[in-house]
Amino acid sequence: MKQKRFLLTESEIPTQWYNIQADMPNKPLPPLHPATRQPLGVEDLAHIFPEECCKQELNTTDSFIDIPEPVLEKYKFYRSTPLVRAYELEKALGTPAHIYFKNESVNPLGSHKINSALPQCYYAKQEGTTNVTTETGAGQWGAALSYAASVFGLEAAVYQVKISMQQKPYRSSIMRTFGATVEGSPSMSTRAGKDIITKNPTHMGSLGTAISEAVELAMTTPGCKYTLGSVLNHVAIHQSIIGLEAEKQMEKAGEYPDMVIACFGGGSNFGGIAFPFMRHNILDGKTTEFIAAEPDSCPKLTRGKFDYDFGDEAGLTPLLPMFTLGHDFKPANIHAGGLRYHGAGMIVSQLIKDGYMHGVDIPQLETFEAGVLFARTEGIIPAPESSHAIAATIREALKCKETGEEKVILFNLSGHGLIDMTAYDQYICGDLQNYKVTDEEIAKNHIGV
Image (tube, rainbow, N blue to C red; front, side):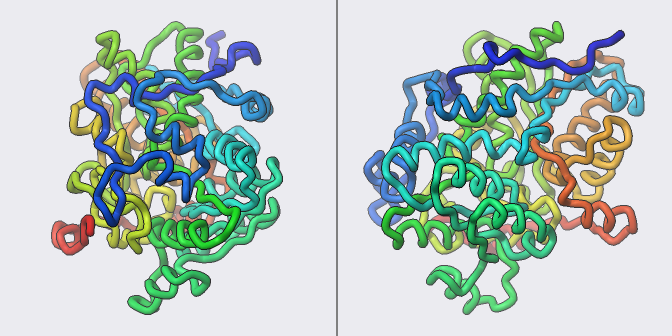
């Protein structure tokens, strides 16, 4: 009988995270202070973030960073997550490719986001913080942060993108169940939110607006730190637990990936699955192809401009060197709310410039078609975000069918879609549509200061 699932024993779970910055031939450009335009140090970032996260953010020397024992103990509640051979999907596609997926949807929070929420809340608690705040799109990060805050005895305030809150109301319920307060963004509870609503009373929100509000709250509230679910380097470090496990599991399967694919919003799950494998391309001459699947309605990887830009709409964050559509870009109201972000992380942006990876744009209807096929073959309903990775995987598997190549494809199933059934109903009923951003829409957005 063919083996389908590969797990690790408790003793095999990695005890260190991987930091690709240490191995990159060209380091990312530094984040800049928005007023002085000077490179930021730990002390600058620590006004907003937990200090240990700031140290990891700027660490370009240590390839591996120890996972704190209290965090590792929490990881062991749900790790390792399975590596699964998608035999039924392969059969349905008629492809000679071997398709594997790392199933991050099976943990209690339903997505990969908990891998970074736990250490961020742990570090915040260790330095005496009492409150944490954040933004969230579809709600996976907000749910994970709310749970992690409750684990470490912190109060949590979450700003959820208003359109996503309407599309996925139960995610807000999950956050509140864990004790968090939740506001739809833009809101009237912050200066940034009021300014955005004043300019555009019907603004349905973006991750950029929600970040502005959360950062403002952290800056104006004693004992409060801001936490982030993607984009920044320290988040990718925490998420590397995914790829480090997958390395060991692929070895158990007796194969090595020719391609690694993940959906892309800010880069957390992509970096998590890809960076541990990418280090072998950098250091050992491997030739694995790395593909980031983004919505064609928010195409920062393929059509964005590389420049210094704000991570939020109001211009409160540091200036980040990244591929960006402009910090005031207003993405279409697609159901993959976690991918509606205007910029790419600094590490990913540098890796794209250096040719180690590339992006592909996927229309919304193609992602749902892929999600339905995956559900009917593998029995898992994927999140709309994850369906971008599935769609990109299907594209590559069908290329193998045409050429007869028996490639090994690994993708990250970053979360389940059990709270996204309204979107699936709309797709099945024919009520969804594609949104393709025009060159004119991209050109009118503002980059930098």
